[in-house]
Amino acid sequence: MGSVAILGIVASVGSVIFFNGMDSISAFTYDLSFHEASKNQIHREDVIFEHVRFEPNTDDIIIDLANIGTVESTIASATIVKIDDQEIIANWVDVNQSIQIKDTQQIVLDNLALGGNTWNHNDYLDKEYKISLTTTRGNFFTTVASPFNT
Image (cartoon, rainbow, N blue to C red; front, side, top):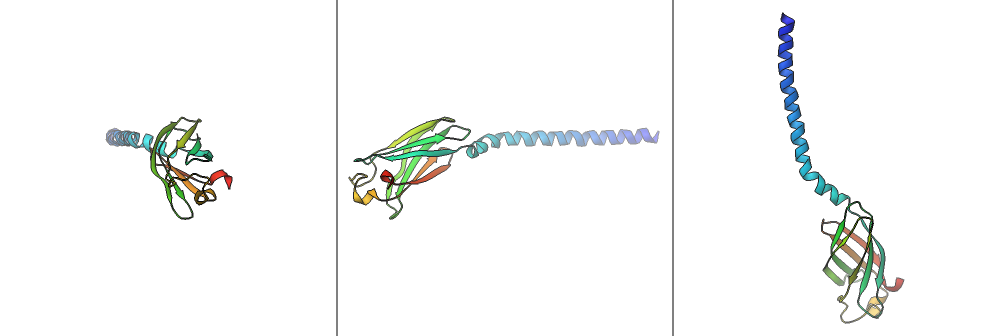
């Protein structure tokens, strides 16, 4: 008789603990569902610069990008800085171009702040430029390039 009473107590207390634990696991999983998708997509975004072309006799730059990540990327803005004297050539220029997964995209930046000069001008020809692109998710990708591979 004592064994049956103890079994009843253990079963009732055990079921309370079991269901309380199941509710906690369910609440934890539900909470993760709000954070997981957006946070994971930030880390799954990856873009590489395939080619940077400084158009001769203009102030234009053509940038070829490849999306090697596992989510679509949208380039929001571009910044270009001349490395040696920190002259800002392009300051947060709006781009707003999407790159599909495993695809390439060409971005053309024109009317840059070269003071009416072109990439062939001595002030810009033999210099290196840091080109940074920012995505809508807040990631940024950077490369260094120079006109005409000088």
